Image (cartoon, rainbow, N blue to C red; front, side, top):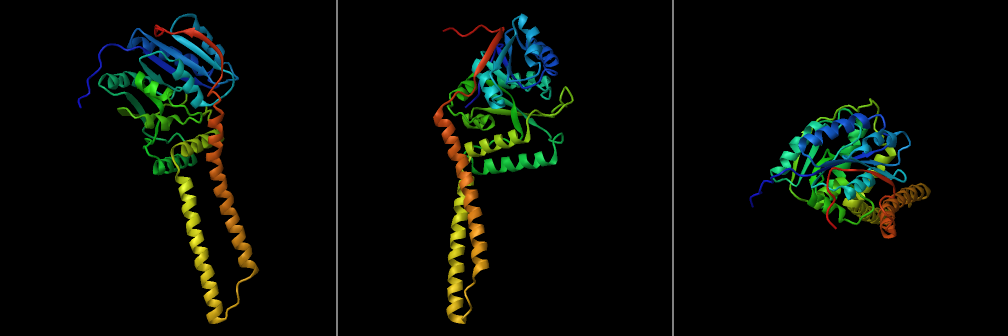
Length: 324
């Protein structure tokens, strides 16, 4: 089926999640507003303040005096996935771009992304060329995560493809229709499908020269959410391991009985029992812990709490709101 190119100039919403990014936002907003103005007359920048405790709100306030920038303040730090979801829910553009506030996403790629959309792509995703700016531990952890999640996932999640992407309104609507509270957007992008093009880029250094606001604990939590949301491989692994251990125990028991009656060897005593109990107890606790991760996420889902709570909303975009 031939893909018909799109014509015209779409309205564009740029969603910028921000957590303690007061030092980076003024320069980013100036460059981003200028870039959007060059791409078309109808656009908006939506800054989602994810419970910052620095001057993030004050850094955005001067930009709210004229149409073009909107501010969404969440009541606390809900995490980047929740902040992005808030931005997507409030975006009014025909296409939506998601950009980090730290200045590592090159705005020079936006015209190329928009060109891909005009050529018929429903989503244009930027893929990192390199991870040399990250520690060896983080690179190893990232590679291990993608290996595990893609090994057991029904859809392949592209490696090194993050949140820096442009999406058609249909893709945004599909994402917003998904009801889960434990959101792993990198997996949800792949799950909803649509025609996606990939462009490669090299992340720039952080504008403030600092480091990522994502702590190791947050990254680990996001990885666990991704694995439990898109793969049942851990459950299958421990189920298979349990079967192998059970067969091994039966074979070992049979060997002891045969050796005792044929060769008259004494039955191994206290050391064998203790080691076996410690080993099997550890395996059981670990498998129960993994099962608990899945059950805990079921518990979170059935409570149906909102993904985020809004504290404040201000500003106005340069996009006419959709008719009621």
